[in-house]
Amino acid sequence: MPNKKITVKKVTEFLGHQHPVYTIITASEQGRFFSAGGDKTIVEWDMADPSTGVPIAQFKFTIYSLCRIPERNILLAGTSEGGIHVIDLSTKKEIKYFQIKDEGIFDIQYSRHHQLIAASGSKGNLIFIHPLKFSLLSTVQLSEDKIRSIVFNPTRPYLYAACSDTRILVIDIIKKEKVFEYPAHSWACNAVLYDSAHDELISASKDAHIRIWDIKKEFEMVKNIPAHNYAIYQIAYNPGLNMYATASRDKTIKLWDEEMEILVRINKEDFEGHTNSVNTVCWLDEKHLISGGDDRKIMLWEVG
Image (cartoon, rainbow, N blue to C red; front, top):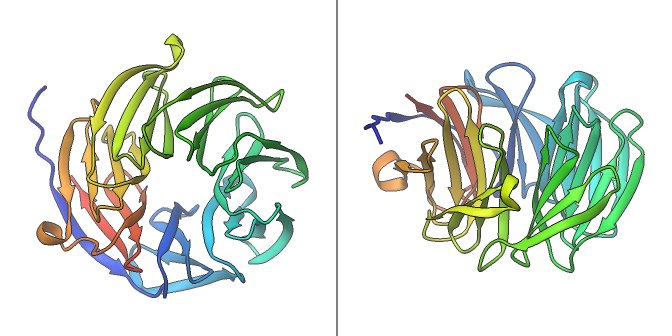
């Protein structure tokens, strides 16, 4: 593998959240993003003005997940008590609310290609929502344990779900049923990411490993990487740099190349990074990475 020189610089911090930050996603305008977490508030930030965050909504319960529908300027938020809030960003008003059996909503994903919203819960349910009518289509019980992360396959009618019982589930989104499953890790599976370039699935676990699965070969394991010291909570891909970022309970962010070879470890000692668990990472653009964690801080990183 050719040598690759990566530079990482901490640009700034975004302070204001009073509890851990669990989720960060991009906004429609370049350089802007939304964050939410334990203080039950969604905040919109501007990369160029870190001192001023704009509150978008506040709920009664912890916010675990956010999802944006760009073409409709809609934001969805999933909370710890099973609420899915649908917010019109142009008016900052809630236009729809779902209550899902008192289970935390760990992930919400939208597929423009499939015209479908899916949400996953702490009691093993997968919830399907119509993206135009915001009507509940169906709820499918898939596990007795948490479904931490879900991802659509943009080219096939499938969705992949990472379960805390170690399995990855393959869901037919037309039939709304499980069509395949396999044990993916030795401990809870926390995150899944679809790699369109190789038609592979990447998973990360509480066992601190990343594993790559060949979809064409019935999810045969391609690679197993001992990636962190503790649980991995999220994987984010940057197509411009062909680079991955991972967030971990070991208080670090790691950057990986396209072969999942380590490029840099972002920690407190060398980069003035997070002092507690890193829960979420999000690429704002080709050069900028945002991270949030249990230390209640959001950090902006410039990667070159």
